[in-house]
Image 1: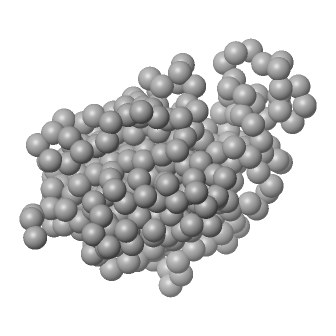
Image 2 (image 1 turned 120 degrees about the vertical axis):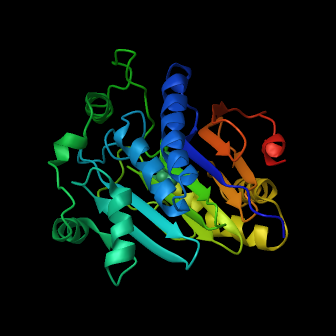
Length: 319
Ligand code: ASP
């Protein structure tokens, strides 16, 4: 087998990303890729790289993850996150956490420091306290933009907005973030983090923290992170499906395309996936109007972009 090419891909959501926010989406994805890539280049693990990249995206209010997350029907942030290590299939996840700035790091701690795979709600926050992860007031994760969006929509006056607040239909997903990587040792890892869907029922958990749905990583196949309508993505266990298709002989791009085709065919949902296979070949596919992403691999510069419906395949990047 050819030596794997060290590669990192990040995404910042797949939906009808408003044109006026394209720059911010690309800039955030680029910063995240830079952080992850610096670690990989320095000999760091794929796991370190995806965590670092996702932390940058969680801290960036552009995205529906960490600071800037959508608010639920109670007007509160409730976040989900997952990490998976392709070396040993170890997984850590958190669901419906409210007072942690970087849920991805808490998910990693669940993976490494607990006997469990997923912790939810108050129990997850208690675990964070036990492990000296700072707990913040729930309001600290709420941006003015999201507070305003929530007030406008919950007041039932969707047209009274000042133009700075994007109208978000109830239940529609958007700016979830994720990263996949393969390191110099050929190890793959993935991380996904989200505030979930706007105005969701308190306690609603989407695909993001579910293994095989929001993410999957296996050194024998590749690593995948998904975004989109969680209720649909989990029906087809989309991230595991991409890995299974790679196992059946597809490249990352072919597998990503096939899984998104299955999403469109078997559900009414929209979404996107990023994938890297065990050779370091990259794949991005979506049936949403856009997906925000950044990509970098050994020997190439970081490319950040908003991929539209007719975007060329990543085949040129896979050579
Ligand atoms: N998949 C996420 C969820 O359903 C939302 C998103 O990707 O934007 O919670």
